[in-house]
Length: 635
Image (cartoon, rainbow, N blue to C red):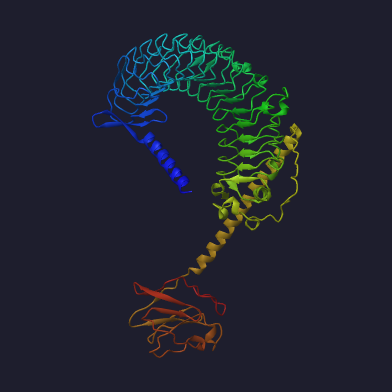
């Protein structure tokens, strides 16, 4: 038993030592610099070693040599001739500006060569790659290349992947790829190509992926791709393409995905008619405003159509069965995007032809209304984008027929939280499968007391639905529009004229009445403004008797008006000087002491008023009217 345990421990130690040595072995390459060596995979990694030349002492059995991210500036003749077992060579992210024509001599079994990221590499010798007869992957991305010499890729019959993205290529020689009969992927993204002539892609019979994206192409010539019978993906996004010859896509019978977004197309290209097996068509961000259904008649495999960011002002009629075209068109379409167009409404049965549609994107279209039958026929739809629009409400009956719908996007709309919207939310929340996302930004805008309330938090108590037909189907209102006759127009005009005359007469009568009342009020005011000036000096006073006559008294000023003798409580006005003997007035009227005259106080038994002195007169501070007494009027 102990022997077995010792054997296991020994094997474990040997295995650990083997792997440790395999991964930790160091290879000195220059003074003070070492590269790591993985002896198991025969890989030497010299990344970030500040090397400016190719090391001389790389083990000859090395299969993978990584020299990326150093400062190597040139590749001399037969730089790797001692490494005849080399299968992968990484020289990317260096400062290589010169490569000798026979730099790769001896690398007959090399499968991958990486030269990307050498910004100063502006040209290549014509036969530099010819020794690499087994090369399968060549990456020349992000260099300073401006042209490709004719025959640069000759004898690379086994090359499968060629990346030349983000260079400065402005033209491609005819037949430059003619020897690459095994090439599967060609990426020319991000160059300066303004024109590609027919014959450029001759010989690429096995090519399945081609990217000409982010160049400066303005048109596509007829027969440009006619030899690419196995092409599966064609990417020409981010160019300036405004014209496509009607035979430009001839020969692309196996094309499955076509990317033409971010160009300057104003219509659906007729050239699409021959793409019988195309499955995805991306025409986003062009200037298209109309959809010709006939172009899609033979595209029976199309399942994804992207038309976002164009100039459509309504849902194309071709998506509706009412258009009267071939019913088989768009039968296999599963995804449709019309976002970022200017579509204000969804009419009845707008998508009824799209029986297989699963995803419908209508976000950012300015959508304001959706007919209750707007999505009729979309029995397979499972995701609906209605976010970032101008929808204020949405009937639950608009989506209740979508039996397979499980996600709806409603956020960032100016929702009016009323009964109609509450019915929709109640339907969504009680559904077993349906949900809506971005609940935090799905909020009420109106009424004001519910503003910023999350739709998910809305309850029946927040909205008054006492008169709503909750749970009942909507009432269908049919409005018939007729053109009025001349007689009806005359009658309407007569009624309007009569109403106007009546309003004018009523206004005149009201004005006269107001003027009359105003004048009468002025007359009354004048009478109330009779001001009595009572002479006053330090040596004499005066009083006003019941008859309204003015008398003098050395005892002081008395002013009394009473309608009945002995009843001072009925008096309207009284004046007296309390420290003087007050004589009786005429007709034996009794006067009552009120206040001092010197303080200019006038007191009525009903209300106090201030008096002022002016030029030797006592002047009441407001108009005083002395009422009639004993058939005499005080003036």
